[in-house]
Amino acid sequence: MASDFGTTMRGVAEKIAHYVDGAATLTVETRFVEVGLDKGAKFEDAKPAARTEIKLDGDNSSVLPMMKNESGALEVDATVYELHMKNVQAAIDYRAKMVGQLLSALQSLRG
Amino acid sequence: MSVSVSLQYIDPGAETTGELYGLWQTQPGDIAGIGKDALSFDAGLPVRPDMPLGGVWRVDAAVSEAVEAQMAGQAQRLVNAGRSLDEAVLGEAQAATLASAAKAGSTVEVQRDQGLLTAFLEQAGRQVQYYAWVETTDRGIMLARSTVNWFGHLDTIWREDALAPQRALHQRSLELALATRLTTVKTALTVVKWVGLVARIATLSGPAALVVLPGLVWGAVNDVIYPILRSDLFQRS
Image (cartoon, rainbow over the protein chains, first blue to last red):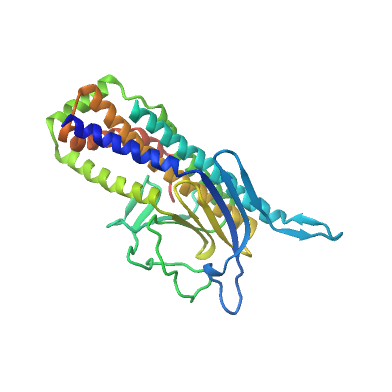
């Protein structure tokens, strides 16, 4: 029966390892819905505003909306940028804590 | 000052209403299809066609600085509870007591804890396996919905005309929902770690290790976090 318990613990460790392996790329997307239109506002009609991809190896890329200012130069929409980057930071912090927890558990289960 | 915030966790797998960490009111969702109180940005539109298996974290409040401060405090309390679990050391004496109780077999209290632990682990599994939705409403008016998986993939749809304080409220909703999910995972992993530790120390195996001990450890883990979650500073209005 002792091996049953060991098998259970190994199974838990394998599941955790599988989750950590699958956590290679993080994507954060921000979209908007216009309200008050005749047709009504639906989640499916949300318009993309910004998108960021972050890989575990540190590579990351963002697509951000640009607007022409009075002189005709392109600049980032500050409100959308701030809103999106807050979510990016929240997602990064959350991922770090979640992966940290899983790795800590994995270490103790294998130890 | 006490302010009014409604925190609901609609769990497709739950069978009864309840609460989570003394913070969220939990209620069953309709796993087969449409949520019971599905929301839309516009009243009168068809409700959403699906119900996420990872559940819906729904926050409704009258936007104010006091509400935002209260939610920030609640998220911090969850962080503190998680930190206490990190710092908690299962001493030899406590491990010996748990092992001895496990060898003695199940009692009514242990069976109750086993049932609670099973339900908790099933809920934790749903939270980890599936995308969850985080929805924020300002006195019933939909402000934003985020979908987020266990790893942090995050997709947020905002009401275009949401004001800065309303946007801040949804950020707090997201923070609180994610802090809750982290606490759930940490609690579940701590139970697994402690069960393994006690079983190793006491060379337990079979039903004593796999059936009785987890219920006992579940009680011990809750003894670490609930005094923090239920302190005077952690009041849900």
